[in-house]
Image (cartoon, rainbow, N blue to C red; front, side, top):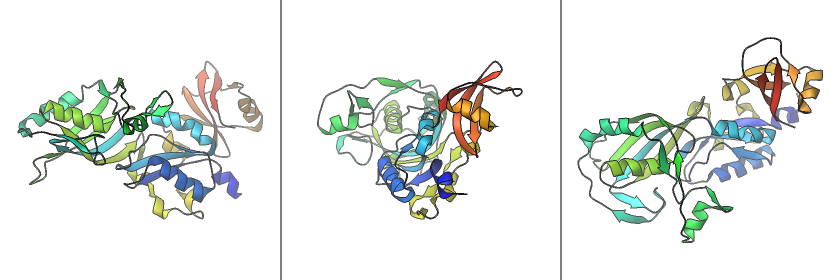
Length: 293
């Protein structure tokens, strides 16, 4: 198979190390793959680690579908300290006592699962009039960010560590738009104190977990394409339809094609085992929604 046919579009799951931005991961992938058009499916802060799914080539147009997936995180928070950024990288701006909290955790875990919105941190990648919020915050600009709707699908506090009475660890499964730094601050507020998130690990996005990810150090120009994720891993809830030549030409021109069987509403349309379009069923026709040129 020609090299281009296996490398011009792909999905890669990267295990991001701490200390670099999500965009640094993209720059690294551009260098080793030779593909300039690369996007990811949800920013990880520099201090955070874990799963970052990257879309290469025309698959960048599918990033939005993955951004909608639920995500699972493991987080650790330090009570009694608040930083400007909500994480270890910011200056400490406030300290406070840490009341006894152990007997409150079960109730608080249930309360967390009832959350419907949280503030967006000032130090975030949200755009305000074309500028990233963190850029404005670093310049000392004053601005307000609205609370963002969310859902906490699952939440649990993990066992307390000995001799660390000011630390809490938790695992949660959350919807798109959930900032874990904001969640940690909310949890601390319910315990009548303050906190910052000191460790954050993203464990899953949709069906993909850290076990599917590869370290940047393990990738090279000669082997990276061996780590591609299959479309079945990425989109397990879609039906797959391999296109014949005539139907492929129609789909590439945005035209509907006939389907004679099946009951699925969502389709991935394939040519040579690569996604060429995302489609939906409309009666007995399949209508292309996203066409990948």
